[in-house]
Image (cartoon, rainbow, N blue to C red; front, side):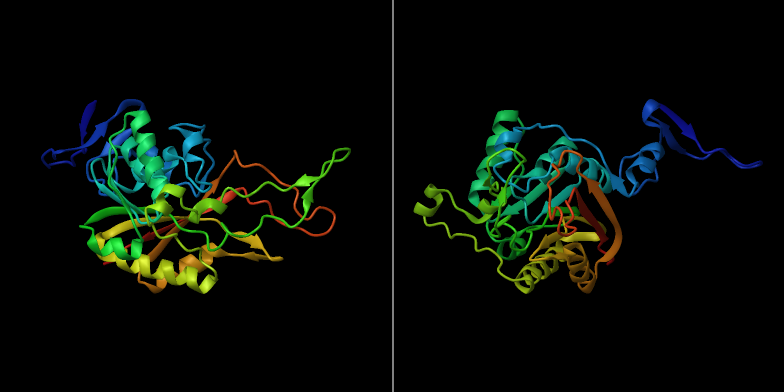
Length: 307
């Protein structure tokens, strides 16, 4: 590591060192208030499309019981962009803990909330198998748990519930290849989001209720992000995973709905990053009859808490 100083102008004294040469990583500026990235890394991190591949890792098969889990390496990538080492990350919809695992990979602290104890157990089992010290993950409704948390947090990263996708049928028809017998469509992995394990039901855990209407879904998000705001530092960033949806014969711009909610709460939108999931399978939708998109990307909506 080589420490460099600003070039001093004629007749002026040398200033304190402000640039650090990190070799292949590039030059780090000590006035960087947001993260630990070098200038070269900053250029890469500010691209509007993320098309990196994330191979199965960190007990992928176990975590995949939750159909909407995000790669911990992707979460770590985002966490490194919006925080410095040792800072705190909040996830009010933690699922199987992709954000928390990402924070551990990035050497950050994190705290999460998940309503279904099944996913919390899986997170702790992943940590046990991988030898990762678990971060705090609370079981409960974010609307009830958030007021009990102690801030401040430097960043919020979450994958919000997708309206009622976990209870919708993927298709009413059957799938058939030429020359092969027809078979039922595969059941969506999203369906078990609100299903309790038998032992949880026997212990009296309340079954998380699916969101039946768009208005109910938006009201949940409005309440959660309003409660999260006092826990965030001034000028802290938020990054929200949300995929748009096609069902009932029309396209639903869910990312637009979420943007409206957060802007109404006073958050300032800063970017819409596109995660192009190169591993996502393509399906034949509407073939010969109508155009139906095969979603291979998700939006990562970026906001800042301008207080």
